[in-house]
Length: 321
Image (cartoon, one colour):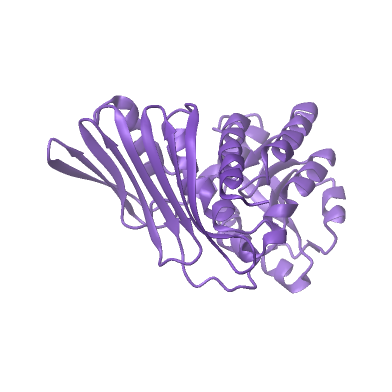
């Protein structure tokens, strides 16, 4: 299969950490060109040296087939729609949109053009994530009653775009697509109700730390997100017969490192080990194969809508404009 030619819009930290190494190691896709306002930064992510300092010029390049967007959150939908209007498939960093209404605009364009538009929820491709879902679905831990998840980090520079309200900053937008979304997909997108939040505001106006609780499918979920808490990551699922947990303080960011899962039934604990892998590459390769007409799982638009609906409600509850 001829490799899919990808173009990057944005050449910041996430692009360098995530899709750059994924595509360098891929047999399915390649980085053809990079769109970056900073020429030197763009060159650092462009194996061919082809860099456009004007994003529209990148979209006008007929050789570019797919676009990866890693701009500030507030710009995701604008450039996703522009890219699809230019005939490009789109993989957009999470959150794909600032609200459900925006998200549906982009989905409408994807439906109209027949192009792929997907939110880059890369953790969903991780073999350990798939195994946790398999265990829960098997019924071995019984009926799920309690779901606890967290994704936090510490020491965020106040000038970082993730802390700037006008650019779509805040812990819930940044980390919620992991810890808040996890109970939703785990419970097969059952209706969510009784959403409550406890929030600490960042000086810049966005949410710094949020505990979000809600009911879903007979279970109570509690999800922590924070930009100012020592690195804490967990995903614990407690059922009527046992529990399953993603151990190792890497529940949502296991990337190129071995990982573990712990299953406890009737007091007996079993640990499952997973080899190091790159879920970003698994995600990008699935999308590249689909672009070429092959097989590969794509996260459905309905998943992104379900997540966005909960975020919208959580922001409403916490009083964020």
